[in-house]
Image (cartoon, rainbow, N blue to C red; front, top):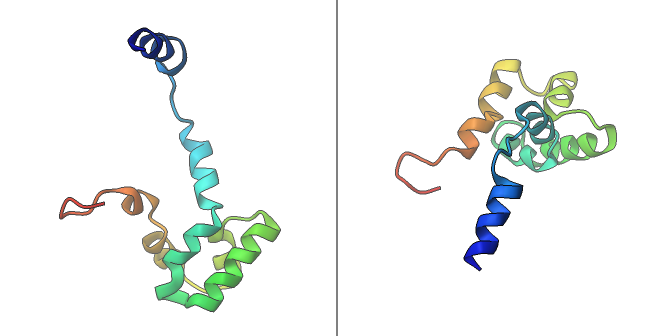
Length: 93
């Protein structure tokens, strides 16, 4: 088992790096992110944005700005992906 783990790590896992731009692209088009917008635009508008994301293949940001539901500054705060994925100050995730 240990040999299998080592070989798998050496031959398949070592050296793999994420394509940050591609990851950002997919993250910004995830309809699940609209839940972060509920406090700003409400559930019904957020749900409509999610539908629009899925139907248009545009990003949440593009749709929100097109519909003038939020400002760029509000979006930057609400959709801060780094802050969403960082562990909270009290040690829980």
